[in-house]
Length: 388
Image 1: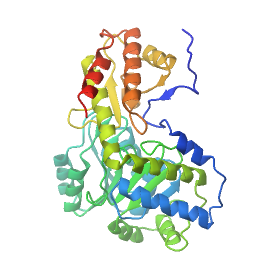
Image 2: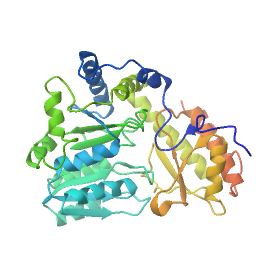
Image 3: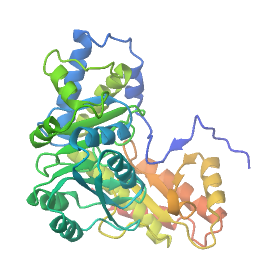
Image 4: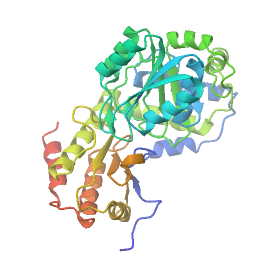
């Protein structure tokens, strides 16, 4: 059939970019302030003040004009010298991205690799660190978007620090939607991005670092990078405050509006909503007999990866999803054609998850799945009916 929906009216149920609140769009359309004016400085400082509670930190926040990958790049270039040993914890495509960055800047980049869908286990990190006591930095993807696995970051962080290393955490699809406690968990270098749980268009990377990480940065040669030299950011912000380069002014307007919405909802309520939406969507898939990729006990609260049932044509499924106005995404790398992923972050609530699930059911059925239509949606209604 010809679709009633177009690219302009499709609902984004992908793991980012996400649907954006009208108040954020409205804020971004405001008249531009000069980025060296007191008006913009007030906005920047306000954003920092409102961002800190979302990850429970007292450390400064730096808003870089670039995607989350810029933050990952900044972490390595600021904290790793050529002779430093780095351990990358990898169980998906985004962990592999950090691994590739590390290999460019360290001659001693090691990898603890876990199969897709499985979480990084603390005891394996312990074993590798015992064999490599000279490790300077360990990197981890908190919420591995490609596989919908939520890695046990607090437990791993304790082991890393017990062995005298620092920890960099990619929290790009966890922060702002799920629990992140930068200070309590001793995250030395935090990275997130604008187009996920924080509900903005792509283009901002959020980074923060501990006092110990700052000391480490002062030991690393500063000729490895220029644009993301965070000591330069720290120096500039301590004075005016100003950014060393032109910031993404309109995105900062949007960030301020988004943070206001986050605090209006309340971080605890926001985390609980994300967790509930993840729970009900996974429950619906299991009711339909669909297998989840991520191992039980380590499943993401912001994105779900499901394995295509036998008999389902993945390309037809994707086509039907688009025809009915919902955009989801498939697997990456070795998972291409084997899974689909749904992001349930930022503005996804009961209305949205019911719509997404009903369309998923219909698309699965039309693409060849042997399922009972309506059973997944009925499961969600049952859970929501029993939820206060």
